[in-house]
Length: 293
Ligand code: GUN
Image 1 (cartoon, helix red, strand yellow):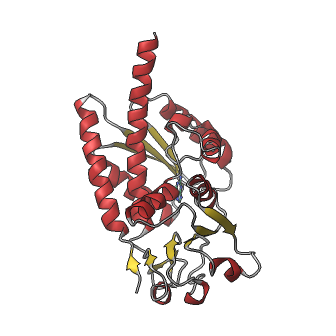
Image 2 (cartoon, rainbow, N blue to C red):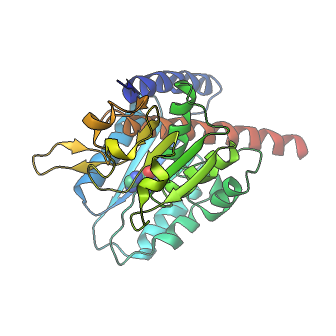
Image 3 (cartoon, protein in one colour):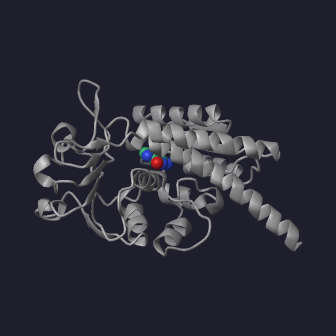
């Protein structure tokens, strides 16, 4: 029977570290700040953004949840991003997706100051991760959180065969970069891949984010594999399930994340961690500029 990767415990540990770092920054007169922009009232997005806002405040981070009606115009949201770009009290800006159809998400993300891009979605930060650049820059929070999980549970990455199911900008593609940069052999497949089992049966580590309940079953898994489930699907009875048939797959895998209580809490904890990273980097940047003056 597989070891269950306890995302709630990992998140609690990470949050405790983040709270300590916030306290240390406050001693130096700095309060990290995050601004979350939510357009419309998509029920899942309302819950996610409320959770982010509450967690930030609990950790001592200044948090602004800026809401717009579903019919907001591009220029209004853009003006809000520019305001936060110019606000010294805000280190991190996040535009919650999905956005209503009339808004152009690409140009909104490109308007965020790359140094405040806490999601790591700005093309400059995407490019830095792809190129495995050294130095400080934000990385999409779910993939970064998964790397933390693998590290904490001592899942080998270098030299492993990894299969990622799903090619999203949010998870699949940054995950590919992180794992490739860490010397894994990575194969990325999607919902149209012919014979997905051909790939998944050979994976030491399988990462699944396709948005289909029970997409991955025990027969798809290499015995002893680690399985990371990024899916969040709400059943008709209101229950949340992942993309992996958890009850079956846990009998074959060596380690597995549950849904809920796996990747989700670690993603929010990583968002908080990265907000504090951005505040620290901004402080370091200001100190460097002061020396060079
Ligand atoms: N919607 C679902 N997950 C995310 C996320 O990580 N960032 C943003 N901006 N929107 C999301």
